[in-house]
Length: 320
Image (cartoon, rainbow, N blue to C red; front, side, top):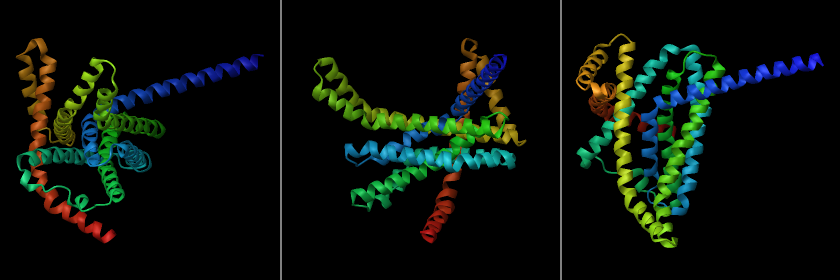
């Protein structure tokens, strides 16, 4: 009997350790996921554009297909790569994180350039030449998954950098939790966004109450403005997060002048509004990080346009 009691005590102790580990993974995943907010918002803002031009019945299957590709990107490719970096080349994490931050700045600045100089953008010629719906769906889904890979790499790198030193199993569990959780959140949100107008129309057509029909009409009218707002918020988040990552990276590498200048300006402005000092300090820091992100992104655009894009196209022709 005493042996059974001892065994139960051991089982209870193991269960407590397991529960604590789960709590640690969940807590670390939440913090790491929050650090990746800019890339997450951009992921949700970018994906709906790949669904334009398809019948309503094909929207959710395409979202599901992209979501499965995103999970594959994160768990089969990026998670092992992240663990290898953490174990054998941790010094590479910050430079890669800064590279990803520069990419976010480029993406945000490119969206601004597209608005300011629309004549320089002629649409997606590759997809415009595809007439067959099945082939078009294949091409757009593949393009979305490729874009997701870049954004997922940034998300997983940010998450990896935010995880405190721990065992490889804890890092793996945390990264997997971040990857799955963010994918569910992003593509669940995308599914709701792309079907919101259909839901609104259904409410208008079948609603028995005037309030229900009015709500449906409101949803239909609101969606174009909401999608525009989502794009603006996503762009601002990319520039803010990307700029912040690069500035903090420079400080970590010993080039902290800009980081300290921004900090001093934010503190000075915060002191001038003592009623909301912390909020004002954060807002000023985010604003200046975003301004830096715009400048960096605009400087990167010519390099990507004239060097990276032709090289990528050439490599695609060689491999294809």
